[in-house]
Length: 152
Image 1 (cartoon, helix red, strand yellow):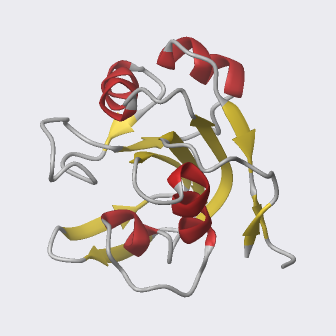
Image 2 (spheres, rainbow, N blue to C red; image 1 turned 180 degrees about the vertical axis):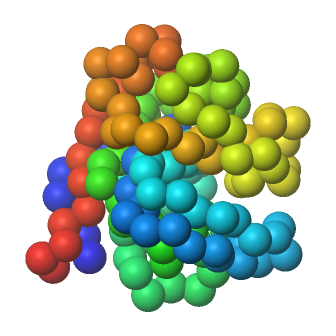
């Protein structure tokens, strides 16, 4: 799979919007079992290493990969519907996670994706797909969007 939009290799912060269509119980590495409900999952991440946001998101879009992060396990049961990102150069990951934790449209998945920080969660459940405009209001910044190309 490849990313549709051409991005520069700048570092930044991204939000994966995933959809789960059925209930499932997924073992998330050593973290534990995640009981997935039909709906949407929003995962906040950052990419400040080689290749920046495009490289990290392209990895998330691939179906065949080794499991390194909690999100890699969830990807087996949920499909990426869109990806929203900021390449501002500022580390926004924790600010975005804190904003989503306070948003009434989402429920934090306690401890998911945040084993290396003090955030409550980096994964959030929503019954409905979030609108980009509403999400920008919650995050307090503009984001750009693209999606995984499933025809490649």
